[in-house]
Length: 151
Image (cartoon, rainbow, N blue to C red; front, side, top):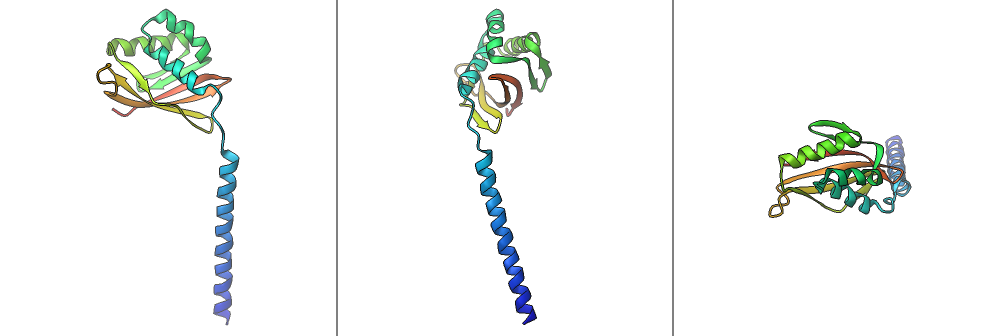
């Protein structure tokens, strides 16, 4: 009798904890769902237009509408902070790969972080290089970009 009672208590405890885990999971999913900010795709499109532009002055004019004042890009070459350094990094990438352009996929949003996969290459092979950028957003502008290359 004691063994049956112990097994019954154990089974009840297991079922109760399973219910709590399921309830927490459901509650967590409901509470953490967050829609993407309005205009996010357009912001990302403008970012890639800047990186595809070969005109240094035009890029610089577009920066204020797309990037926060403390915007930085972190990639395998290092950390580029501010308009001048980011603009120089863009020029460097373009000089190393003349005629290449970025071809981004639609932006994905997950709890305050934006992610975009992309191809980079000439028009006849736009996915020669593949990668992704992970962005943070602040006050409607991009505040950081972390670049990952998948090759």
